[in-house]
Image (cartoon, rainbow, N blue to C red; front, side, top):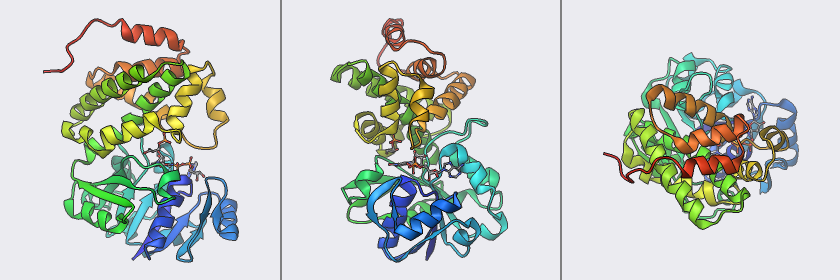
Length: 334
Ligand SMILES: NC(=O)c1ccc[n+]([C@@H]2O[C@H](COP(=O)([O-])OP(=O)(O)OC[C@H]3O[C@@H](n4cnc5c(N)ncnc54)[C@H](O)[C@@H]3O)[C@@H](O)[C@H]2O)c1
Ligand SMILES: O=P(O)(O)OC[C@H](O)CO
């Protein structure tokens, strides 16, 4: 089977190499033509994944139509806010039999939609059962070194989730399946916001108690949003929930935790983001989730505090004090 990977950042490149090394014929599409030429010339991604040599079965292209032509599976690995624009370059009618697997994590800012909903919006000829996501604790830096990693393939169709599992599974990249695509997508998106909060705690010089509190209470608000959007609360105890939350809040590789750490040290969001070459999805997702939670009446105090620090200039010390001095609560909700 031919597979198209759309997006040649660190994650798209890592997955394209993994699939090509498994023997699939893979087309990796980069949205800038000059970048595609550079990748093909050096057979390496110097910008996003230096040190990983491309196998011969990996084809690089700057032409999205040729990338998806005859592909049995399309992997979307562009930043969440560029997904709609990228998919709109495709001709929906030729993709009816294709499985689309989104690996970007986030909620669309303008619509509040999950990314699998964006896929179906832009490509109405595709059935929901043909859409999947691949989420979970998986930093590209470690996957590309074949370090043990576990992820979850989620689709409303178990058959589709199992196909995705078959395609990606290796002895170092273990793939589980889940049919709760709503829960997996919401959990995998909210974890980036909570990771920014964890980074802020690091930036302020707080220790393990504060980090554990953010992870645990972050999980509680993640669960409330999953339920509010019709997902299964059990999903948050899985790889896209607690799994990805732990990795992103603790990892030195996490871009979201890094953004938070810099904010905690007193830098402005603009300053941090303009000096980063990689995407931190938690930034737009914070805005999208605050709007969603207000609409649904879901209480998400850490998310709101992150919003206030990122977008309203609230000092981090004040935001933490406000969180700590909220009215006392029961730990578990009815
Ligand atoms: N890097 C990881 O370890 C990792 C792991 C799991 C999931 N993800 C998710 O994968 C997605 C992509 O992240 P990444 O780490 O590969 O990104 P990255 O920061 O490494 O690279 C971003 C990529 O997006 C491309 N891009 C930027 N604007 C674009 C546009 N308008 N249209 C098309 N492409 C555009 C850039 O050229 C670049 O190739 C994100 O949603 C991220 O959360 C990343
Ligand atoms: O580096 P981050 O914070 O974007 O996280 C990347 C992945 O989502 C980790 O699973």
